[in-house]
Structure formats: C-alpha cells, structure tokens
Image (tube, rainbow, N blue to C red; front, side):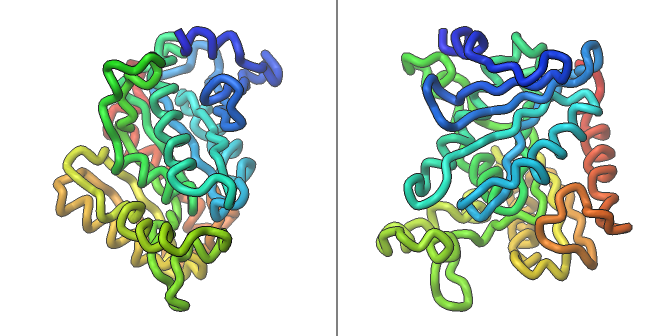
Length: 282
C-alpha cells in the first residue's frame, strides 16, 4: 500500500525534534513536513498547514513552521504543505496537492495515532485561498482507485483561514484576474474560466466544514470584504462559522507580529477548537 511505502520514505530531520518530511506521491516535489507533539501529548487532531506566497513562493517559516510549532505545542500533529507553484504549475496543480495532502494525512491516521474525523486545514493569504478551495471542492474519494490514498475522503473536518486571498481569481481594479496578473504567463482563456471555477465563496455548500476566519480591516493587499463574503456564504449554507475582524494589522502577519490586538488571534483559535472538542484527547 502507498501509505505504508510512504511511511518508509520519510526523511527524519532530527529524531529528537519530531520533524520528518514525506512526499505527497512517490518521487513528487510536493511534500508534507510533519511536526509531531511531544511524545504522549498528542490529542489525535491533525492539521494541514498551507503557507501563502502569492502562488509564486512559500512563506514556509512565518506561515508554516511557526504555525506548526504552535499547533504541536497544543497536542495537534501539524503537516506543513509544500505545494506546486508558478507558471509551470498553474491551477489545478496546487489544489490537487492540497486535496492529496488531506487524503494522505487521513490515510496515515493509524501511524500517527490520529482521529480520522479530526483532520483540518489552515491557510494564510494564497494558502488561505488554497485551503478554502480544498474545503469547498471536496469528495469522498474514488472507491475503485488503484492508489489506496485516493480512496480516502479529502473533506477536512475544520477550516481555519488567516487573511485569505479569496479574490485571487476575481478581476481586480485593472480588470485582470489577480492570480493571472501575478503569474502573467498564463492563457487568457484559462484566466476567464478560473474566476468562477476557483472562487471559494461560489462553491460553499452544507458539506463545507466548520470554519474560523480572521482578517484585518486595513489589510492593504487583500480586502477584508472578501472574507466577509465567504463568511456570509457559509452562514447562508448553514455552516457553523466564526469570524474576527481586527481594526489594524498588516497582511502577512503570521501569528500576529507583535501587534497587541492581532497577537490574540491564536488564542481565539484555541478557544474555538477547544469548544468543538478538537483539543481534548480522542
């Protein structure tokens, strides 16, 4: 089975640090780096972490390792996703990686002592767009797939979004598709079709998982209104959701960047997760 062979393909960074990296598929450049809680302190919850970077790079320290360490300290096994990027890997390549990541984590529940119904995804900026797309384009797996990982559901059980770039595929003030204007070397025909296909708010349904969102009013990169629209779509679909809008805070703030108010968002997430039983031992 692929999940078993994958486990043997892990590369340990340092056994004492509890950090390993595994490919999404054999030979793939896309990976998951696993941050395990202190032995004996895992609560059975897992989360895939999708860093931002405008789909051109990855803020894997600020929005990856630091976030993963925060979760691991609370008993949550964190998997930082390295997904495909740039003009050579346009949509749906990043989305396929995110979907595969959730399936893979669920398939490895036994190895990491995880509860298969407590697997979430968190994303920041472009990673927030990716996480929201993953959570709104889910399926139950392919029962007849030769790869056992592909038979597993990619539906996350919870979704967390930090200043998500949810309008990535929508026309901006220059009448360009934002994602396409960043990557530039993409066919205009694809860009036109992607606006409807890859705008998360248009695909929210009752199957979308419970969601936590935070954003800032003066975000100069991604308008807070995009998060408000997604939150409204969640409410309309009957999806339990919580949203916090801070008055001030720069885009790309990670865990808060020292802002007195914005530094509180991780505590708010912890309270939200605890209220849903995600931080208690399964």
